[in-house]
Amino acid sequence: MHKTIRIGTRSSQLAMWQANTVAEKLNALGHAAEIVPMKSQGDIVLDKPLYEIGIVGVFTKTLDLALLNDEIDIAVHSMKDVPTGLPKGIVEAAVLERANPYDVLVYNGNLDFLNAEAVIATSSLRRTAQWLNRYPNHRIENLRGNINTRLQKTRKNQWNGAIFAAAGLERLDLLPAPYKILEWMIPAPAQGAIMVVSREDDELLKETLSHINHKKSQIETQIERQFLKTLEGGCSAPIGALARYDEEKQHISFHGILLSLDGREKVEINKSFSMGTENINGADFAKTLLAEGGEELMREYREKRKR
Image (cartoon, rainbow, N blue to C red; front, side, top):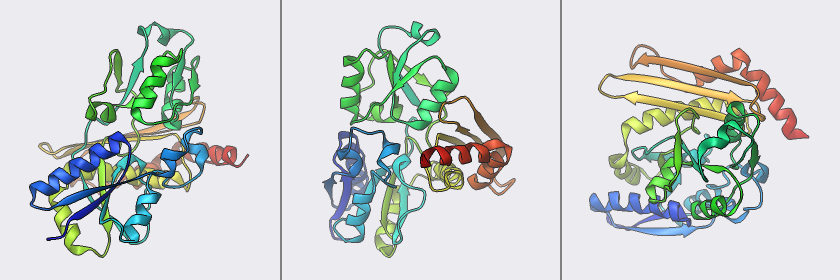
């Protein structure tokens, strides 16, 4: 491949870091690359929680169109932002090695507030529901914007703390003290992973990108996204999933969760097995969860969204 590979990305600091990481990996393989930054609808509309914007692929649609219109050759995304159903003509071409998949609580003062009334900031339905399930006496405030903006708001406001994805803070070296990794909180499916997509018919480029694919991360995120796709039913909901693949032991563990919006109800599934002992498919885990109470939660959620 002799042409310069045009890499489409959102223009935020974190997105640019991700795109530059892909560019460096392509450079190491002998390919020239250039970054093409763009603004998504999710970057422009900051006064509403993401679930209220009502656009599927709020962070990816602009790049999808640019890719299909041959304005860029590949697009780089935070994988957790990518809809489980990719647009026709676009395919997953690589998943980079996954970073820390967990959420982190950045807080002011000390953690005494955990056992009292408190205010926690996040715009995520998943984080909100899991937090309220654990701390029902706390109140949630909406928090939008890029990482730097959200950190500034956290320090400026009288909130007790705010929840972030650990991977973003760590990648930009912005993890502030004090903080606490929330290993009890099940992350968003594919959180911490970077996805590269290309046009389906670009065989040469897909072959090139296969050399930067991280198989372990691809396996984990595939299971999580299968789980999410089966549960979603066309809408966003408080869903968490985490698959962990031990390559040496050929062992996979999976934890999935679905909650009501207020966090009062939850259903979850834990699976652990060796590779090859059964057909590993996140969709099957989702079906089990739906049969054990998840279907009722999803039905209630859809009804609330219609109001």
